[in-house]
Figure 1 (tube, rainbow, N blue to C red):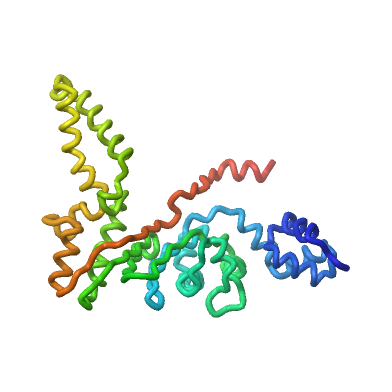
Figure 2 (cartoon, rainbow, N blue to C red):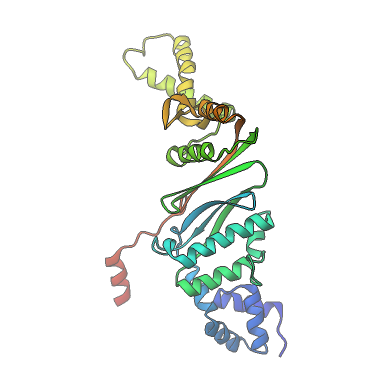
Length: 303
């Protein structure tokens, strides 16, 4: 029995399985929807689809370099325990290697790419991992640096992944410099890399806050507005020091800024190193985690 695109859509809505899996199921079932659902259940794909609705905010962020290409990815799971599972970690590494090799334009492109050394797409491999591990697993995001020298740093077994991209000359090994900078980014999470990136609207808002603080300070309130404005402008340097990576105190030596550390360390190695860019992924950031209420859950079960 033949089947139509509408049949595929209907099966997808019934099971939550992917389009290609629905097509395979309908083909195997000769167009019979009920048999196709049974086929998906037998393959475990329908069960996988049900798990996909559960919140995944754990997992790991991985920063790595594959064949000279810097990659950072975040792959989520439901529990912290799975983030330490060897098969899960191998899957995350495979996703990173796929990103390095294929240079996907976006997440959709990555999910449709062939997973490394496999005939399956990344989406299909992700579904396989759901079935093997028994939790919802989701590739969330990635970034990639093809040029320059990339240095990765992974904090706390995958809680934070940082990838620093440097411009290096003089044949020096900038790995230690890159790692030091990455550790600073992991720890302090600066809003900007350099003060040149701070937009005027951000400065205006910060200045407004500083002026308001002085208006509420008995010692400063009586000063003319022009004086307050000038003082506020002078205090913006403190804002740069707190919020801009290169202007921050270097955590390992607070006698210098990060920018000064990079220049000094590079000079000691006999070359030059300059910071180009960085990416910081923290697992689960921005994902609203479900707050479980055990009493309510039990009550709903006995209704």
